[in-house]
Amino acid sequence: MIMTVKYLTEAEKQESRSLWEEAFPEDSRSFTDYYYREKVTDNQILALVETAAGGAMNPARTSANVRRQVSVQRAGAWRVEAMIQMNPYLLQVGRNRWNIDYLVGVATRKDRRRRGYMAMLLNKYLTDSREKQIPFTFLMPADEAIYRPFGFTCIFRQPKWEWKPEVGKKFRKQPLLPWIDRDEYHKRLADTAEWMNAWMSRHYEVYAVRNTSYLYRLLQELESEEGTFDVYYEDDRIVGVQSEWGLNEREERLLYADEKYVTTVGEEKPAIMARIITPEKVMQAVCLRPEVSEGEINIRIRIEDPIIEDNNRVWIWHVTPSGSRTERVYIDPMVRKSQREKLDLELTVTELTSWLFGYEVPEKAKSYEKYVKPLARVFLDEIV
Image 1: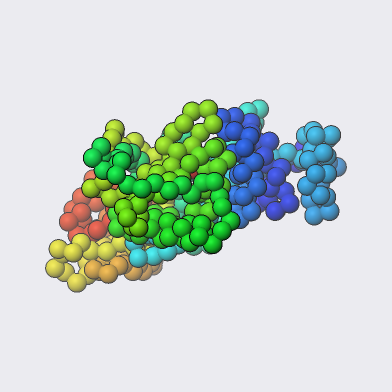
Image 2: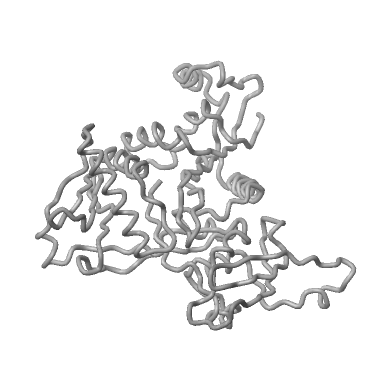
């Protein structure tokens, strides 16, 4: 048997579906159909592939149907044993817009677990992404403990809202599902996407940009589980959107509206973990607090990263009212460590991620809390 780590080609991506179905049996057939019809069209799949000697397929010369038949007829000849899927999202991060990978479908076949396959894939993904200068990545963990050794940490607690009794019934409700291919419908779709993005920008600093393409794909996702998507109007003005879905058990997918219309219910629970990949990119998005009188503060900081060797450096972090810039510090290898590293701050990449995304200030960084304004107000509620 030959084991290969590779990014699957467009023709090969469907070969990962059997692993998805094994790892996520709770997903309905209709949802998985949607995912493998829509989401894999623009994502990347990093996989560990096992090929039997003489059993490799040539996806470029084989139709999708024939490939599936070959997989069945020659079980084990070509099989995805482990995978990570990277779904791209355009995120607003402070004043920046970055294309960021959302990691989903992180899975290993049951008979191949506890062999270090996932560590192999995550380490490759992180080092490859550092070369591409990707600022950070995020995921929704089934178990936080799986990802902590790789530098991931929580950055977002999921809130839940409900309509206030006195306002919830007075608005006019108009559904966006089912889909209607008419000009009037497309205008409502565009208006709704514009409202959603404006609502996000009023309340948050880090979020997925809502545009017509985002909303169109979300509606397909909801439709796969008989979902609803309702737009609420006061006269002709949009005041909120609400959605639910679920074939077997209905659940609210989202409710966005201003505070005067909704109230928070229950306790916010940690929902999303993230990991900084290119520190100098994320640090650029951080600025001084408005009340700080200094025009600039300089922090000599060392970052410790157990996986990405290029991040293990000393930086001078110039923090200004409008943002930051960084410069690497050259350390003469002939000089003793105690003499060459006069640091203001030393943080692991995990601590840096938690701090810069406004989740928790590390104890070592407390003295800078009154100066540095992190990227607080994160909202990432994507499912896949």
